[in-house]
Image 1 (tube, helix red, strand yellow):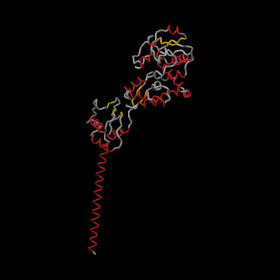
Image 2: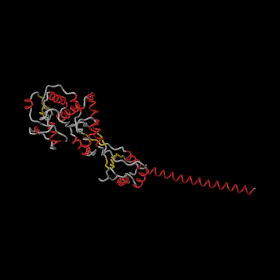
Image 3: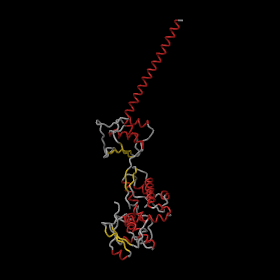
Image 4: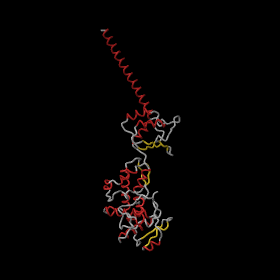
Length: 371
């Protein structure tokens, strides 16, 4: 019995020793794994930018230093995470593009096109999180009052928001026009001139809808009852507002101009607006903006020429702003039928009741266009 007891005792010691060794190995292995994991986390969360390896930029990197000290990073359309990593490594934002590629593979989210603002120091993980977030930098673009669709398209194109052609295509899209109940062939006059914030390379359809939504929101603030107007009644007012926008220079004269145009419509008199002739010259004929209209310009045969054709032109001629829209919604009651710019420096017009007074006022001087 003593031998059996000794054997059993030895077996128990042997099993305990084996379990102890296995437990020790597991603990050791776990410590190694934890150490590696901590090292990876620390690496990913440690900024690569330091005094030993400063940020170095070139014109081909698509990275710009702002005055605030932050950097704007442009992720180009169709660019891969590998090419982004190469740029980030070359400029010193990350220390190793191969580790960057591993991080991108481990994360299912894709890097999104756009422009991002990065403040340093920033870790590799922070940079990656920013570029997959889609939180782009919005670019400020101002569309002045009185511009046409083509000039708006040029402004947006030069600002990198959307291309000239894509904007005009969207602004003439029948589906969008019908969506807003506009009885015209384009959104001319219905895209509110304002300061907007868009990402770069933004879809033109969304730009048009944003500007149109802004137009109707502004119109609601100006005249809460405008929705009682039918499509034609509203369109007529927008057309007149677009003309007033191109005619007035001093805000307090706008309601008076609107009153003049409504007076002419009421008695079936031609509107005789210089702005409509200017629209023909610049937008239809593609000629430079004239400083002074000649009498031969007033004889151009075109439906937009309100010197020849009575009633309203086929559509708006510009983007009316708050002043012009407010003027047509609340026109000034007046007996005047004519007005003429007589002092370009002050912007004042001479208003008259008779054609003889109007002729004596002087030559036809047009309002400058953008730019």
